[in-house]
Every structure is written in C-alpha cells, then in structure tokens.
Length: 176
Length: 435
Image 1 (cartoon, each protein chain N blue to C red):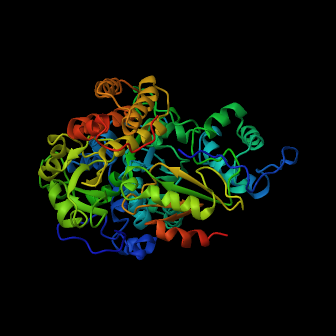
Image 2: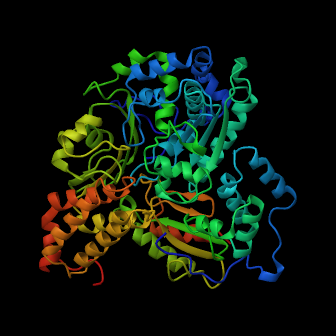
Image 3: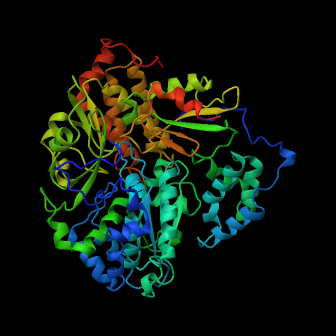
C-alpha cells in the first residue's frame, strides 16, 4: 500500500525477551488441523501468518522465527513472504487499522477527500502514522473491490461502503 | 446500488436473481430455490458428458481472458493418476470489478455447487477457493456455507451418496493484486510469494503442488449449475450479438453514473442500454467522456466508441478495447484523464511483483513520467518516451500486468492527447507538486 506502516505507538509491542509463542494450546490445534488441508506444511504459511496477526496485531521478527520453526522453513524465507503481501503488518499499528481505497474508480468519486477527513478526524495526521492516542492507523490501499459504492473503507474487519467526508466523524466515533 | 433492488427490464437476471435475498444465503433456502439439483444430476453423469455440455454451452471465462471453459477442462488428464486440483479464483481485485464479491455474499451455495460440479468434471477431489484478504464478509458467508454443505452431504467423502469425494478449502489472500493471475495464485496457495510462473508447463499439466490443475473465476463456476439444469442449447441461446459470446454477464458499473452497481445482461446487449437505461446516464449537468469497459487493464474507450459497442467479447474488441472482467469505469467531462491515467499507472507500479525488468522498471518510470507531466514539467518528448516504454511492456513479460499498465497509457495518449498537451504547454495548472 502506498501509505506504508510508519507507526510506532500501538498495541502488541511485547519486548523481545518476553516473546510468548503463538502456536500453543487451541492455536496449535488449529494449525494441526490446517496441516490436513494442504499436502505440504509450507502451504500453511499464509494461514499461519494470519493466525499470528490475529493473536498479536502484527508480525514481529520473533513471530517470523516461530512460524519458520513450526512450518520447517527458514526465517529468511518466511520474511520474504510476509513482506510480499501488503496486509501483514511488520510494525505495530493502531488499535484500529483503517484502509481507504483511492484507486481510480473511487478516486474520481472523491476518495482523496475521504482520506483527508480520516487523517484529520483520527488525529493520525499522515498516512501510515498512528494517532497519538494509539487508536488509529490510516493507510491508502489499492482497489478494495467495491467500486460501485465509493468510497469503501476497511476498519479492522468491518467493510464500510459509501463513505463520504461528512460520514467520517460518525464512523471514527464508533471505534474506541 | 446495493441489493436488494429491483432488476431493470433490460437485464437478464440469472446469477443475480437472488442477490439481496437473505434466505438464498442458507443451504435450506438455496435448496428451496432449486439449488443443488445440478450437482445431484452431475454426480450421475460421466466426467466427459459434463465437459461436453459445458463446451456446447459456449461458456467462456468470466475472469477476464474469456477462454472457453469446457475446452480448458478438457485439457486435464483423462485418468487421475496424480491428484487433480480445482482452484476457484475469488481474488477479485481488478479496479472497477465487484461482481464476484456479490456472488459470494448473496449466493454462496451457487458458487459451492458450481465448484463441486467442476471439480468432479476435472477429476479433482479437492477445490481451493482463493478469496482476497480484504473480503471479510464474503469470507464469513462462504465459510458458513461450506460447513452447511458439508453437513448436508453436498460436499465431503460421499457427495449425495454417489461415492464421489469433494473437499472444499477456503484460502485467504493477504493483499496482492497479482495473486489474481492464475500461476501467482498457485504459488500463493503453496505458501510462496505471489510471483507468476513461466508457462509452459500449463496448469493442466503441472499446476498447484505440481499436479494437474484448473483455475476458474467465481462467475464462471457459478454459471455451471444453470447450464446443467437447463441445458447447453438454452445457455447458448442467450446471445444478442456474436454467437461466440453466450450466456449472461454480470457488469459492475462504477464512476460517474446515476446508479452504479451490478447489472446482469445477455451477451451482446448494447453498451448504450447499460450506460443510459440501467445506470441512468451521467450525473446531472454532466456528459460522459470515457469508459474503461473491462476493468482497469483494458484500453480506454471514448464515449462515442462505447455508445456504439455491443457488450460481449467480440463487440468490445471491435471498438478497440476488451470485455475483460466487465468492470466498467465510467468517466464524465469533469475527469482529468491525465491524472486518472497516472493513478492507474501508480496502481500497476505498486502491484508489480517485480520479477520482470520491463514491468518493475516500466511501471515505475511510466508513473514518474506522468507525475512529471502533471507537475507542469512535462516535455514533448515524453509522449514518445511513454509509448516506447509501453511497447517494451507489452508481450514481453511472464504475465500481463505490465501490458495492463500500458493499455490505458497508450489509449489515453491516442484519445485524449490534448489533455496531456495542456499540462506540457503550461495552459493547465499543475495537478501535482513538481518532481
């Protein structure tokens, strides 16, 4: 995504020495279940990374090491994959992660004004930065696949359509 | 326009008939609407008979390439010596396209049924449905639907008591447009970076995990049950233009129209009917200027070209563009074409997997040159530079991402050159800070 992840504040920032493994207990069981769905352990990489992000909010170096371990891959390989895909966070982000589509179909319907309103209302100020209260990180993304309902935004897992600058304040208030 | 909404009289609703009806989302509701009849029928047929039926229907790939579906299936080995795989491409990311999302949200069982029939027809016991990571709602709806279908014996070890085994696994993408390219998608499922593969070998020979694989788009697969239920001849008769384009097509219309949304039309419907009757024409006081008819990767049409075109694979080619995924981006006279072409180039530069030099460098430099023009620092030579770059980006790379970047640039310069000239001459205020 064009904005990048520049934030430093946010949740999930466990100090390195205290790293607690993700794949224990029920999460480990879910992973074992995944192994039955693919002929190789490597193929479980994308789902395993999603599980890490779900649990920790982002994917740290230590988490990359753990994933490499459980899937019998090298950390360098895992990192190569993590950095290829834009939805995996390699830095901590705000409690609520906001993705705004600004690709042409939304762009011609005013998406850039929605971005401006979101940056102002969340207090993020700039793309990729986390708001001082740690609540939000806002980034621009390429096509969210809802071009007929401009501007679509994704707040965490909530897909919100037809967002206009006027609606931004109300949306921001819904997320503590 | 979201669902539910009444269909327009010029639409032909087949796939979208139950969009907006919450009951159609459930297994029981879908069965009530006649769902899973086609799968029950299919498991009693031979694989060859199903493939012949689909071939005869004239169904072509709805993801963008338009390859005949039955023919694609027939490339799979006759005997399943190794495991065969079906991959359903639900990585809908082509700017302007939002139809597969609605199929998954509203009629998940239509897709599951289509996948199950297709998997059986190609000798696959396992189907992976690759859903883009951003599609959180379709993911939830599809997950629940797969569980329901499994519980009722439509999937699993013994599909409707036939002894056939069909397993369906949802695989979530993680943000990469390129994974919609079929070989990149296979790499992504295998746990790799989404780099497209060199062909040959083609997927039917060595695809997912090196095994024979067929990849089909959501809309293509969702059409299959209708063909089995009502017959190839009926499907083939859904045609208003060229007999090579049959069936119905979901059109996603976005941009500057009164009523954006999904519409389903018979192949060969005049594009004018879509633009003016279904979508209600341009916003008040404006005029249409340009249309990108098949998702952002196809050449831009002037409104005159679009108004004369018939909406099918051949009709749009005749007017200088392509049907693609049928994601129609409509632009009115308020649109700055240079700015939007730059925005598209930026999209491709961001989404390039960076394997091929022509693409990695070409998309980035195209973006920079357009930025320079928009910043008021453009030169006359930039036209030739952009066209040379585009030529080097067309037909020279592993996949067609760089060709897709070149398409709007070349057609944009051809058809809207005066808008570029205005920036270069300084008669138009720079739209971006000078670089």
